[in-house]
Image (cartoon, rainbow, N blue to C red; front, side, top):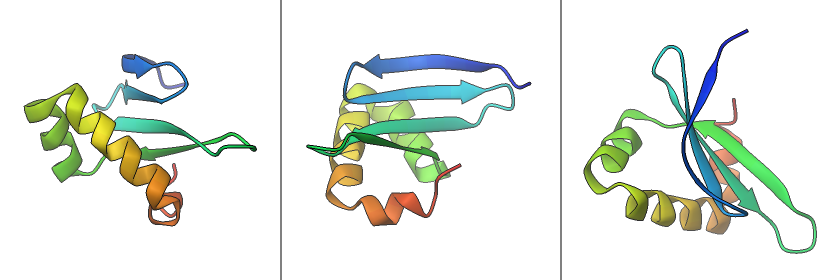
Length: 77
């Protein structure tokens, strides 16, 4: 089983993890009445955003995931 390392977390908001291969995954809490999460691998552009901007990039990405969940549901792992 692959080991997953938690990199950054904001409770009830989002979590960034990384697996043994170096792949980052972003897990966002979505919904209002029914709560669900969308977890997907970060693409190269998103990884660069995280590396360059840090938490603020993740916050903006989490807003985008909640506003346009269908875009990210296709990328689920």
